Length: 168
Image (tube, rainbow, N blue to C red; front, top):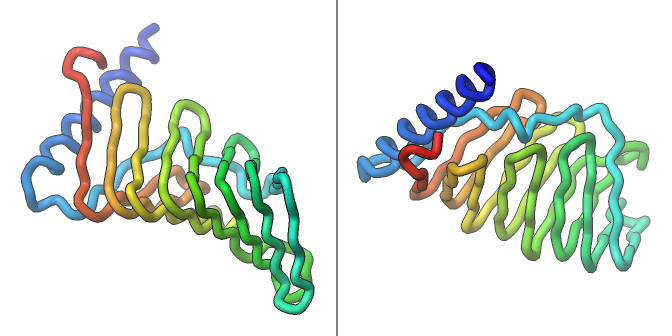
């Protein structure tokens, strides 16, 4: 019970700080913690889709139709995901998602137009009308850069936050 109250108080403080920064009119970038989006990047990456197209020549695979990518606790959904494999075809170099991108892990979720992910480092960039929700707190901007290994990130572009006073 005490732990929940501490967490709720911390989230409320974060939301208040973000709200003050966002409403100042000068906030173009906001650093925040995304503990819910932290994941173990050593976990395997599973991809499910309606269709797969492979290009051996350039080392890419394009998954389309109801694409779901899972790594550890992280789940990414999109209309299409293109994977670029390393030159030895043993690992994923980059993953590019587009078309209704949704990212979820724990109680955190984010939506965007596109996402670029490097599974080896855990670096993820969401671009275009990004909305992040963490419980009762919502944060929006044009670009969200996350480190899934550390659970930290930066929202940039005109940053806006919404929170409900008293819902901490």
